[in-house]
Image 1: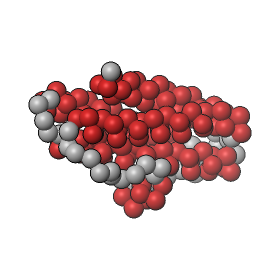
Image 2: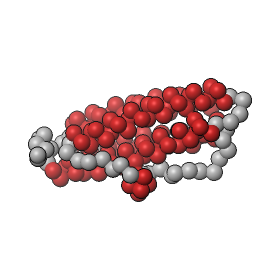
Image 3: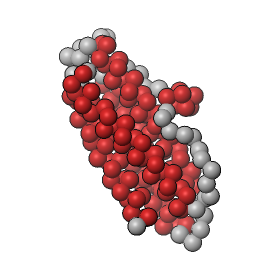
Length: 157
């Protein structure tokens, strides 16, 4: 059945394309955070193992909400590893040790990249594509990523 929610197909397609990129970024960040959880070493192992777990759990919820937003506006979510790697703005891995500071630095950079992507799409989603719902949705995601980044950044102070 046709999606008739007051947004043109062309505009919904443009928003869905951006959300597909966001979903890919979220999946890559989730995977990298899982990697940190699984492979952290050092004297702060236990506390960082738990910290990374709390972060990937948040990212799991974010991924689900992004995919569901795509479905709400009448599009399918990308859902394969090859699609995610084609769509992401993030790098899959970097050269670093398996210590907390190495993982934290890399994850912080990725959160900040996602924050910039989200911030850059809030106004276009609302004004150019007339999708206030998705604009509001990603504003909430922006705030979540800012909080997650703050928790990571606080380890460097």
